[in-house]
Length: 108
Image 1: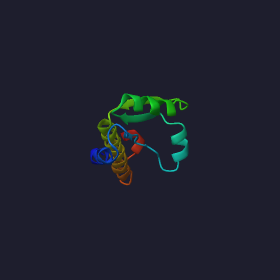
Image 2: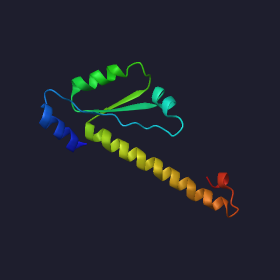
Image 3: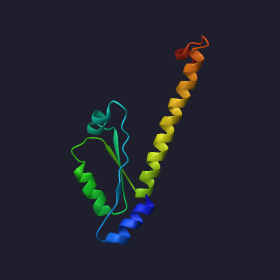
C-alpha cells in the first residue's frame, strides 16, 4: 500500500490527493448483508480532514468505526484474514477427528 500511496503523491502531489484504506471483511454468500450491516468499519487515513470526510460518508451506517493510519488498517486486514484462516483450519482438523468416532461438540 505504501508504494501505491507514494506513487500517487509523486504524480498528483501530496497536497492534492489523500489515500484512504478501508479493508472489507465480507463473507461468502452474505456480502450485501455484511456490507449494509457491518459490525465495524476500519478506516485508515493519515489526514484528519480526510478521516472526518470518510466518517461523515459512512455516518448513516450504525456500527463502530475504527480510526487508524493507512498502514495500521492494512495490517488489520492481514491480521483478521490470518485469524479467520486459523479458525477455519482448526475446526477442519477437529472435524477430521469426528471421522474417527469422536464427538466433536464434546471436544470443544
